[in-house]
Amino acid sequence: MILELKKYISRLPEKIWFRAMLFSVAAIVAAGAAKWIGPLIPYESDMELASGSVGDILTILASSMLAVIAFSVSIMISAYGSATSTATPRTIALMLADDRSQNALSTFLGTFLFSIVGIIGLSAGFYDDRGRIILFFATITVIILITGTLINWIQQLSTFGRMNDLIERVERATSKALRWHGKHPYLHAMPPVDIPSDAVPVRCDIASGVVTSVDMGLLDEMAEKHGVTVYLAIHPGKLVYPARPLLYLSGEGATELDLRRFQDAILVEHARSFDQDPRFGLVVLSEIASRALSPAVNDPGTAISVLDSGLRCFEVLAEASAETEDPRYSRVHGPEIDMQDLFTDFFTKIARDGSGMVEVQQRIQLCLLALAESWPQLFSVTASDASRDALERALEVIAHKPDIKDLRARSAKVVAAGED
Image (cartoon, helix red, strand yellow):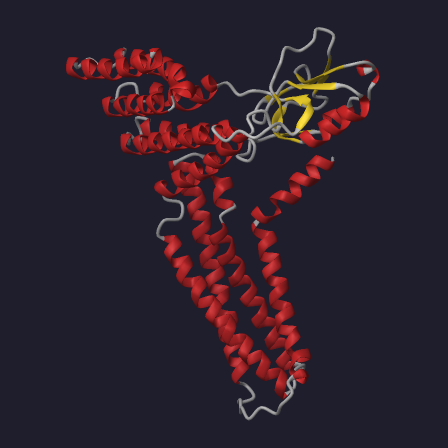
């Protein structure tokens, strides 16, 4: 329950309603504060404002912002639908968490509420002369803010939800997860070891789901408290079910412990997330490429762009792996993500769906060669296996002999890099 609450709070900034609520509250406070700030002005202002000038401006703002909000929401919904049909539904979570679109919509809503509250205050005689002056300057400030937000929003609409924009969003999220994984390959814990035969399994006591977060600090705290060692059997992104162990406990008295506290350290949800799951981003990238390579779309250029993005993601992983930090939790042995799984999630699926497109196969071999030659200790063996697999798939479909000769030569370079 505690982990669910932490996860919920950490995701609040990604929710549109949360940011809109903050902007709205700030706008209401700003409109109401004009009454109390006005009397604090230590001088008599010589400004002459027509009694209805501020109200007229606020009325224009309120009516225009209502139209802008409706337009913006329709554009966002259209972009979400386009992303679902052209790329993959898994990209919607990244679009919903977009800062620029959330800030734009929240600013428009906040301005609307600011205008409404100001109009109500003026109509009710809530402001004195000084208060109206403060409200006037606050309105000018809001207009300047709205102008900048509109310009930024119009600029974003030219790319929001487009294919390149979606690929870049997934690449950023994947790179972030892979960078964290590269620095903490075992989730801040000790490396995995053989699990003792007498270790007590801790299983999932709810319906099947996907692990989205693991509270390693809580596991280490509980292990220290009860004098046991924890062997984590899953990592974020893994499908779990009641018969599958989440972790194992080894030590004196392990069989007598209340296992619910250890279960509470692992959050199981219905859908994967990009946060702690480096494999999920690679899966989403490969889904975009697979959709592009389908007979209905037939867009190898998008698949090649995805391969380039995946290459950059693996480069981020390699660079982060060179900066591995020391383990933080001594009583927990973390899980290990096999490099073969990462390559399978990304390259194998694209090689399967693009088996008949020579340009896609050539780019696959080029990306594998780049990884094998640049970071041989980390990627060479796995890249060689992926190269052979991609070549076999291509040979089953491609019949043009020069293309076959070219692909064989490219694959031979990758395999040779793995054997060096």
